[in-house]
Image 1: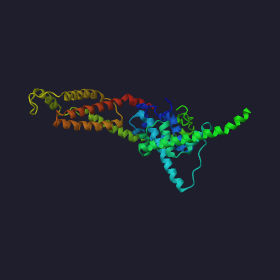
Image 2: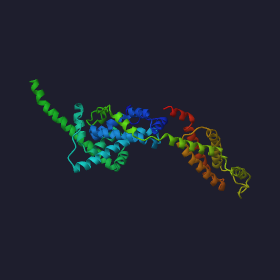
Image 3: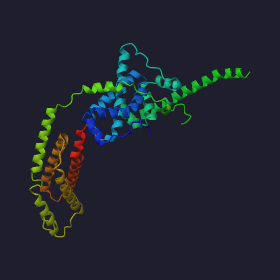
Length: 191
Length: 173
């Protein structure tokens, strides 16, 4: 089990302290979940600035509303839901802004070692990227994703299937291109 | 999925910026905490409610009637019941559970409570009073007795959950 995942449970006393706005407990809980939260936000947004906003606002909301949560064990999943909602809201807002004004500046460059997959992910439509990441990396079900996006489970299934095919095809194409550009050089070296 | 180029779980984890927590903490600092005076007022009001609730005779005035009715069930002379009427085992069970939980609650009521627990327990006490009123009219209603036992169990759980030790530990933070 990934120790930074959202499925790490809190105990009831910890949730009570969160409800009482205990800053020390908040920091401990932040340290428990921040890696998972950051990875989720950066993958969903593809942008460090947007991920910052989502994680920042996600933790602030989760801590302020901790008193409303009944099940301490579900805190991580609750936080994940808040962060996904934050990113969805940000996408919608950016969609409206880009329709009105100039396009936003591009975000930070992906890790070169994973350039192909990361750049393919970055190229995806935000909704496709969200479905792909939440299902394949976070392990969420189609029903959960649909409920977050306010859509149906079949919408999620269709998006996932289409996105997987598209990304796989793009990655395979890139691999083939690399092989064909490398091949003559190898032959030349042998000679 | 080992050779699948679309293996998202293998993507490198991204480290969050170091200044993220200070920024969140600063935002949380702006959350107005409950003023102490208001908290004390609530606590005082809550203590008063507890004092009233615990000094009130807990058994409903017509409790003796239930029990005599219950006994009379066996005698077969309860409200026109036929002499051959058999005791309902579910009813017996619910009544026994109810009595057992009352004993537990009697001990638990001496503990300290926080204000939020008092509020929910006050609601439960009201619901209990309402159920007792219903039982006064229908003392052999198994469903009502089961509801009563469930409610008492919930109250016992609430008292247990908010015992003074928990509060003391919380106060240390």
